[in-house]
Length: 166
Length: 197
Image: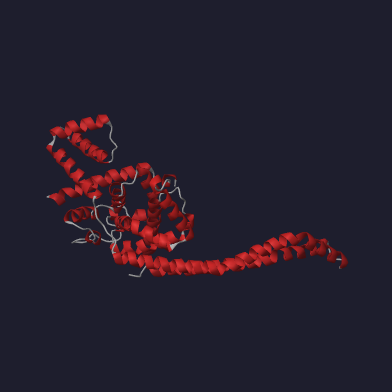
């Protein structure tokens, strides 16, 4: 048997472990192993190694699990608190937006009437209308977003501090 | 994430739905249950990546915090273990960059050897957690092969994950996963020779 045969056998042994071998290759390997003590012993060693990998025991300690659960509870409370703080702002933003949409036709007419009375150019009173229309919801959304960002920062900071707990 | 499809089979559908709802709500009690179920597998996977128990334990805790924070992104058709391991892997990459300015591939480069910690003269921390003589012997062998191979060997032979799931976790082509498995087995075979003598 040539060195190339042994090399092929070694590759096929790995293929057997990965269930990635054809019937023809399997037959060739079986014949080779029957006549080669060295490769046959390697086959046994590899099979034992794979078997050992299957039954490997690594356990997380109860302390680690307990600490992790506590950290999860603390973070859940932080997230809940951040959500509770932001909720009123988001609700106010939604109500404000709906109110503006519903009242827009009336306010538009009011601004138009006022513009005509004050002899303003159309662009001026229309700009005033747009500001009135967008401003409240924009301010509320910005406030909500800034609170959300702040709570994210707190969360990230907590993340960082957890790295070195143990 | 196509391979992350189908979490539990039919017999566990109700339990699966409870977990999904709990994850979306950010319910810490559901996280308690999931930690109980996946604690050992997750730690083992992290140890295979980092080769360091303190590092693995830090990232273990951080992984569950991320699961809590990102629970709303979880989809019921995904396999939870694959999603969990993906999060854990990304955290290891982040930590590797933060500590050493290295990517995981550089960290796990075959030439680089052990990952975060140099090979210890006696038992490595990775080995210390293994119960039983045979387990110690296998871990000694594993600690001497590059982490890039150790990772796929543990996922394939211990967790018995299908190749598609390993692809989803590691985010490399199937051919790369197969190649790493072949080389990993080759490395185990070569390392076991001197171990046995």
